[in-house]
Length: 487
Ligand code: NAD
Image 1 (spheres, rainbow, N blue to C red):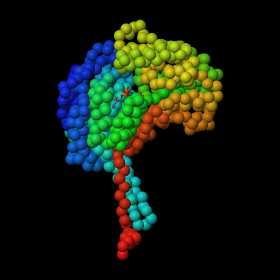
Image 2: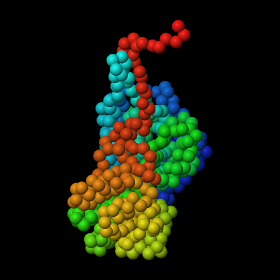
Image 3: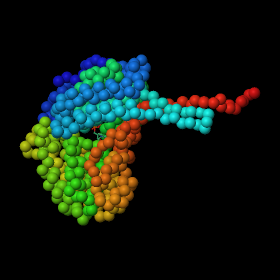
Image 4: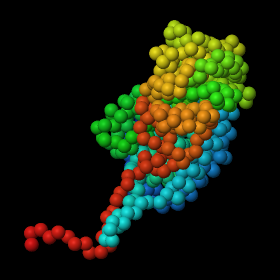
């Protein structure tokens, strides 16, 4: 299959004619030939989007008018949800049952932001008795959206829906390892009734197409999700244009288990939290910190559960753990398995390719016990089905361990001591924290991380803030006395 860019309502190849190949993770056979965008393709897309911004109807419509179209986009996603899930599953190696959930979330994102923009009020300040200040939100202009390869369709819509709701035309640059599901977006947007030029898609390699989008002078806002190091590169490049940035970056999220917790539920949450979505999940509970009084039995049960996780072909509905995205990512994850062993962590489950899956990027659910904070597997984001378990004795020690990495995206606390739960909730360095719960998102809440996990928040009106500029207008309601100079 050939994938092209989508610029100003037309499917087009790269101006240079260049393409790249994308592999199917379950087999590593080439599955797609994809247009490889460069600065000139990005420029064409930005010009189309800029024209839609300056001359087109989209930024001038009312929120309710845009919302009606976004609801049409949601409906167009829903009529294709099985197809989206199948493409996503083949292209990313995600188990089909989990890819289906992602397609549903994508439609929900559009409906949700249609509601947000319909209901969003603007601020008014009365100043004394003589002035009214009112604040209107203005769409910033062309939004550059750069997305990663994990859950690509859902994450693209997580940015597209609020950017479009806010009135910004967009240029989307999907990840080069998972370009397929984005190729459905043009027909979805057309069916939803989006005017031409408002949605533009440029495929390509990050360092070329992505970097050109960040550097383009007519793109005032970039919303990026990806690795922390890429985020740093983008920030450096965006500094010249003083661009507005939203950065959703990496994580190494702790899950704390105290001996007074419901240990069965904590175990379920720990297993699901790190092995769902192939472990390729930014909020994965990839460090499990367990109180020493229950540590040995928890590790044993965790290892037993991990060993029973069904790893298999992504399209098989029985599969719980599919294929990792790419052979080089598989090699990177395997290098962490070697590093854990070399540094003295105790491998209690997985660590190898399952014998019944000789090709493709498969790795059994892997558990390292007795991991210490100095080990690389404790500190670095592995982004695969590998979890580290570390014992602690006191609450103070648990907190120190929880905060002992450079990341601060999510955290999970399992305890039935209410006061302790609240103490830890205040002290753990994380943008988002769940107490006695797995990761369940309410789209109204601010999503994002602290420390090296990101900058800014998305979700609900926070996402609209990313794509709009507040514009304050001061209006005199009585003839104010004006100091008279030079009389
Ligand atoms: P990545 O940083 O390698 O790539 C992300 C995107 O950036 C891709 O589209 C890529 O082509 C592009 N890119 C690469 N170099 C670029 C450059 N110099 N300029 C502009 N664009 C460039 O990340 P990935 O490997 O695709 O995704 C995995 C990472 O994403 C993990 O670190 C994960 O934690 C993170 N992530 C974070 C969240 C979150 O919400 N915090 C969600 C999902 C994934």
